[in-house]
Image (cartoon, rainbow, N blue to C red; front, top):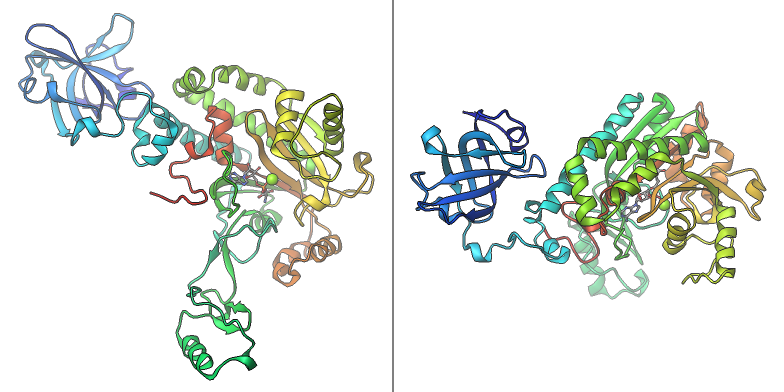
Length: 504
Ligand code: 4AD
Ligand code: MG
């Protein structure tokens, strides 16, 4: 008997002898004399389980099969037969060599957390080590895989090179200061509170002793000196691989990075994680227009990949998670994204307010758009993905290219930034054309009070053969939400990290 995955067994010819290995989803017993049970066996290879028909003539029917419960693991030998509805199932009749072997029992089945019934998402988060055993989380896991593979394929097919950017970094890419520290120093020891000349002899002795220990920071009055730290300077977990990937872009032309990124923003929302994955392409000899075209093609490619490769899971999301999901995604595939200058967006929002629309945050040119504004634009006003472009420079990162004055009739300076907003999620992509002119970049770094010395290697890219270039970052979990209709970012990553929560 050939061992087939459930996905293949469901497609095997009637009459084929097969073995399947997996876990029981449900067991149903018929009242037939002598015993007859139906096992739904799944192995995660597709959405559907396969039914294994077990007659009472199996030698272990009374002792084992009739006692199987959800998630017991089994090996089943049998013959593929057609079901009245046109599907396939396995007959485990021992007269034709059928057998069911129990591999692992479930302890205390009444208290097994993942019973075959509807659980709340909150309950499943508390059981994140077991939740992938449910239909929903099995489907999420398969889509996550499909989406990652599609991302690599999209760039590979277009001649991009995959670059592994570091996770530990000494520079703050977004300049927003929301970083997790990486240190081997024992920072638990309180810093001296008094100036050295006011220190008591006893405190001085203690301080000097501690300073001799290998993991103690060198104490200077009021601040930690990181020269004794592992890297000899302050280091953090990266918030974005962009600055590093730009170095490769200015030699390989088209590159991307895909990895985990970390942000210590204390926002407990359904769209923010402290650890999330981001895919960041970077293209040389390109402007914001080319960047936005790449972003649009990319999102459409990803939707298409999930629809064609995982039709079974997508059908489930459409029926059980977000009614109308497939129609929504079909609409996104078939319409060009709306491109809209920030300055125009503000006018639209102001007009909506004049017409009676209420927002929590006031709107005026120069504000950082809040999620309520973004969602109004994409969900209510345009009802389609929107690429907002050319934001006020004050609210964007230092590396974004300064636009000529008066771009889009803006009342202040703007930068060549873009955010892609999608219905249901809001911002899914953030990107920009990069400032390739050294003098303008330096002025921006200085103006924003960033430590210009730390950016010496980034500035070198502008000194040696600079070129216009652009890129963006797609939040992988936001893309997952958009494509599956799942409502909380904590439910599209296996083990979510959020403020106050790092279990598992
Ligand atoms: O807009 P962001 O901050 O852009 C950057 O980091 C750029 N350096 C990217 C680049 O140009 N190479 O983040 C990019 C995307 C956001 O649009 C959002 O989808 C996602 O990353 N994101 C988060 N996703 C989950 N949890 C968080 N805390 C996120 N912060 C950003
Ligand atoms: Mg952003």
